Image (cartoon, rainbow, N blue to C red; front, side, top):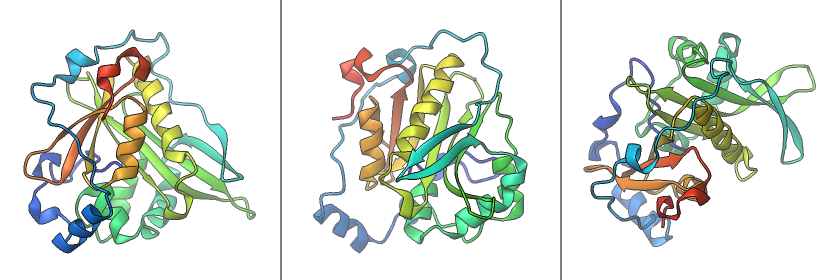
Length: 243
């Protein structure tokens, strides 16, 4: 999962520090397993120059339409989150392991309050984007299995994205699908790239960004990477790929 979603009212993203890292023994174990990726410092890298703004579509203000996908042999609905999803988001959060929360937020959060949940589902989808992947139940309800979102920066030139997928639904292509859709929406809205902050030992998420042409640079003082993913095709520029 990409972490550090810039939720309103939460600590600034740049406050990542060593006090937020997992235990040293855990990081050493990850290194022995070869989890920690080797990524070069992108000295002087300017994502706005590397990934210039895209042509703006004429229909950029419409929220994304619900879409049906099949993941792991099960039908899912990918649609924008709405205020009625508050309870589903809280239940989704309660399913997370401590490691999922660390990789998603960069620090431990003990609970998802109703106030925070409502803030995360009641989103102006014409500006920001918050998408959920729902699995229909036999009783006619829905179970939230994944969330992908981005928040527009104050200048309106780019946005920061974040993802989280239920542990028993990973490896099915859900996160890649969410990423591609966010990139498509961002490109239609004139953005040349999206960014994300990722724990340095989160090899699966870094691999997904790599496959989509991302470029990364370490965040000083933290075991985390800042990744920039172009909204255009990765083949447009080989220099944008992660090594």
